[in-house]
Image (cartoon, rainbow, N blue to C red; front, side):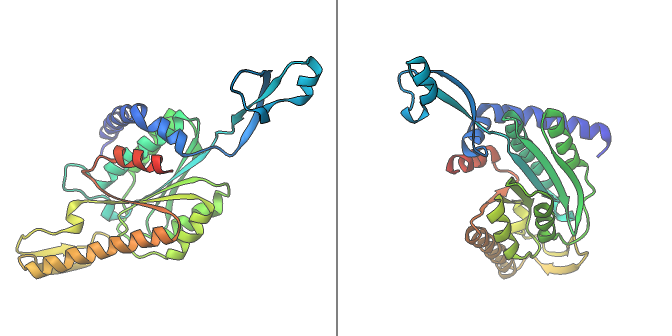
Length: 287
């Protein structure tokens, strides 16, 4: 994309996602992800319905009328977006590339965080970590993150989710909300998921195009792996071949779901044509 196209796309994404975010996601996000604790705010006279355990007994004794301590949530959280920029993510058959769909979801999450005064950071990775944007607050920062996801050079290399997770844990010591975007076409070390989910709140999001799961009957076709460059001829007219391919993809997703579940992490399998806002809303509710 040219710069003018990127700017246009970012504005479109901001308009679409902010409407969705303000309508439902922001409040649900706040309820789902609590802060790091409570901090003292002020002391005020007791009101009917206040909890007795909040009474400030020293001030109550001094003024001979009940006073209570008002506590506020220490809200500030950090959200990290880990985005796979291997070449298979630069693909789509429904008028929207996976990278564009990821940018929209990232925008919704980012604006939800920004609306709650939380920080958001970004890690772009494939076979290694290519770019890191440190966590910051604010609308301009979220727009910069969207732009970077759209403008990244998507790399013809096998994605190494393990390296991205290891890097993230090495530099972000404080517990964070981690959203991992990938099509999970490549192998990874499931041990790393368990380590990461112990330290952070992790949601893996498999972003897929419908043609990733099922290949239509188009006769003999030359299939090309965008990450490894490998090419194979396949007889897609064969019902058996198509069935075997589809079953292998289903098995891969089942294995992913099991890995994330046993790691006490969350997982979503999202088609680029799906309404992600409903899926996120449900996820926030469960949290």
